[in-house]
Structures are given as C-alpha cells and as structure tokens.
Image 1 (spheres, protein in one colour):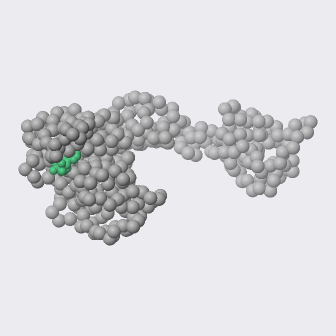
Image 2 (tube, rainbow, N blue to C red):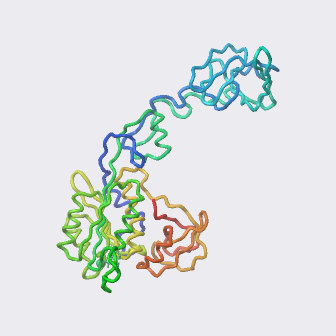
Length: 408
Ligand code: AMP
Ligand code: MG
C-alpha cells in the first residue's frame, strides 16, 4: 500500500514483535493464565501402565471361543491387578491396570451375566467375539512416553495445560511474570467521568478512553496491573508523564495527540524520550494516525502505542494491535491474533481502500451484523457492539471476515 510503511496490520505487528523481548520469569506455583517459561518433560509414561478403557471383562483372546466363562477375580482402579492364569474372566473397571496375561477387554454390555452357588459366569454376545487382541486397552505410554516433551515453553496455563502439569507432577514451574500496563490519556479537554453535568463546560469531555482501555485490558490474561495517568497537551507535562510510565511499566498506551494538529505532541515527545518508532500511520480505519514504538533498555523492551484519541479508534486499535503484542512480551509463543471468521448479515455494499475495522453485533453463531455508527467519535453506538470485523482493502464487505471480540 503506497505511502505507508506497512501494508497491513499483521505486517506492522510482525515488525513490532521482532524487537520485543519477553519479560523475565521465575519458578513459582502454577498459576492459571500465566505463561510457562520452560519445557516440561513427562516424568512417567502416559498412561503409566496398560489400563482398561471400559468397564468389562479382561481375558485372554482364547476364551472368546468358550461358551461360558467363570468370573475369577475383580480389578478396580486404584488397586494392584490380581494374578491371572488364563482360566477365566476378570471383572475390570475403567482405568484399572490390565493384569499380565490378559490381552483383551470385552465391554460389559457385550456379555450376559449369570450367578449360581459357585459364583458369577458370563456368556458372550455376538459383538464380544469381534474384539481383536488389544481391544479396549489403553497401552502404557501410548499418549506420551516418559522423557518426551509434554509442554513447550510459551504455553499459557489454561485447563488442559493445568491438567498436563498436574499429571506429570509439576506444581511449581518457571512462569513469566504478569504485565504492568500504563494508560496515558492526553488532552486539555478531558475531565473525570464523575464530574456532575452542571459543572461541565461545553469544551470539556469526560475521559472515556481511560475507562475503555482499562476495561479492555482487564480481560487480558497477561495483564496484572493497570495504571491510569493523564497529561495535558504540552511537551513538558507529556514528557514527565510518559517518561515516568516508561521507567516502571511494561507497556504504555497513550491516547490522543498523535495526528498532525498543533497540539499533537505525542510523536515528538516519544522521540525525545528515546523511543524507537516502528510506524506512524497505517492503512486502517479507524486509527490511521496510530503510532507503534519500542523503548529499549539493555535488559528489557517496552511496548509503546500512540493511539488516536477518538474513542472508536483508541478502543479498536488497543484490541487489534496492543493485545497480541502484550501476549508477545508475556512470553506466549502463539501471540499472533487468531480471529474467528464470521459472515456479515445485511451489510451495506461500501468498500474502502484500507483495512476497515467495523463494529459488529453477533446475531447467531458465526453471523455478525454491522453496528451503524457515525464514525470514530461515536462511542454511543460502539457500546452496542460485541467487537469488530476487519475487512481487507476493497474487499466485498459481505464476504466472510475476521472477527475480533472486545473481551479477550
Ligand atoms: P486527538 O487524537 O487528541 O486529536 O483527539 C481526537 C478526538 O478524540 C477529540 O475529539 C478528543 O476530544 C477525543 N478524545 C481524546 N481523548 C479522549 C479521551 N480520553 N476520552 C474521550 N475522548 C477523547
Ligand atoms: Mg488531543
């Protein structure tokens, strides 16, 4: 795309990600949402022994030729398997170790059970005779062999990862620390949301970006601490505020003051503070003036965004650009966005020669409806959206589009 350093949002993200170093890690108790910083090796086979996949009868294959078979023992999960001499069937339960000498488990539903004074016996239903050797047995190590890598560093602890860690005996592990993010809202017109209506002058507006970004960030699993700061449109105040934020926070998200107006001092301020600008302006709507930068010190790198002040731009660009890169500095290997595809209902036929982020409301699984709005300042209609779709330049807006939900 001519006139822009990067032709797409993803190209810009890739360039930023290349310069970002993940935050430090330390060994601590497993914590949901944290990202593991070391490979995990299986301490034993999974399963640890040959176990039954069913409630049923463990036998040697040869017994399938007999009409009636005695039940000679029982084998439950959590006990050592009984000895087996091949002369009968062992009643076995799901997860129990299959006794040596048994090569088949027949599910209980494929047998007919009878009892007399000498004990229990079974006869086979037709389906039982179809069981080949090995049927209904989970082989020792068939999921994973002892010594193999069970989890790769860079995975986030979610339900399945927590299960794997628990299974392989890991209660403490190297985890990347969680992130601290500063929101810096700029503009002399901003006033605290709690200011009563009667005290507002016509040129004052309530600071909605600080609230929007804090709420978005609260859904990000890598974010632990959110600090909200405000600064007026002068270089001195901006420099102190952003400079202070860069010294303690992993990411600094500035809103406002990033376009071409006389009061748009954020690009100059970031330059003076020593930030390396990766891009300023992208072929997107809303949010064209977006600025991405990195603040590098010897032992760390900070993620910096100059977001346009318009509420729809600030919100969409935070979700689209800041969120994946927060994952990147949090150590997540799969930090790249994974939007879901949706089809767009009752869309207008407008196209743009830009990547167009359009607020949508989900109406059915996989189906979104465009939320009509009056541009990047329209936070009133934005509140009725579930997220946005991103339509590629000149693309037909009714073709399936990538959907980004507000909440992560
Ligand atoms: P700017 O990018 O600073 O030129 O701001 C663009 C528009 O967004 C202006 O109309 C601002 O008043 C508005 N705006 C900037 N910051 C905020 C904020 N924190 N909350 C709500 N609106 C804002
Ligand atoms: Mg401003």
